[in-house]
Length: 395
Image (cartoon, rainbow, N blue to C red; front, side):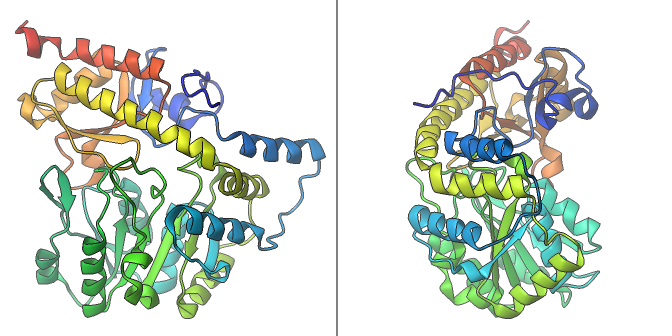
């Protein structure tokens, strides 16, 4: 029903993933393979294409009226997929999650305030914090039993009066960890005890593999509701990143009022009609597509993990319960990170995300996006096999 093996040519289409390779990585080879930024190489759900086609054929592209159906579609999706009751009145659309994080910082904190992040973590957290003149407070994750864990005791010992807000990535990017209800409850209790606001970025919540289950922070710890903002989107799930539409929701009426004030003050309260139409259509029609996608991604994950660990003896892929972003540690190969990067870029002609951009703990790692048709993935894995051949043969 859905052909995820189909290779869709994306070069020359204003695709950041494909057309910015040379600019951002220095890989000028015409056959370079992008495995960096988190968008997929698959066609979006047919219902999305149908909705956009209908809009194009209508031929009138005026201002979008937010009549409430968009937030209702989001609420319906969260109820169906995650058993979470979201009041549409809690929802504030934003031009993507990262923009939403910046608006939250402006609404609820002051310049110089500290924002807790758990590195290694999504690099845009760091970028948006610094851009808004707030300070990054690193609470380094610890690795245990092949997954990440939060060390809240260590964090408590370092808090200062300027520590105001916590950014959580749930599920975690780049580690693929799905936080347990107990872990979320512990973090919520920590935030309540220390009078901290919790922002839970749950953009990857739909991309969870069999054997794991995403628990919304609000579900795990309803007692945190009055100091919690949750961020979600259809864009990551359904390959609609170019729509630049996300949502922040909170049951705290004061938080909602202050956030909406910042949205209006920033001039982003008039929404992109194509983005709103695409994301609403995805939530309403995309479930069968997603159910077919997840097993395909799981097979890609397993293939990449097995092949890269075999190609580079000593390399280790972190157990990945969510996302389509493999987090591979090359420390055990004995190669310096610079040498690993050189082999991947120059020999394999692959652009992977360098681990250091995710903060402390990422220095010896690379992040590989495997959300691509299997023929492309197989080509990439073959190149990686060749790039590290001497580690297996001694020559």
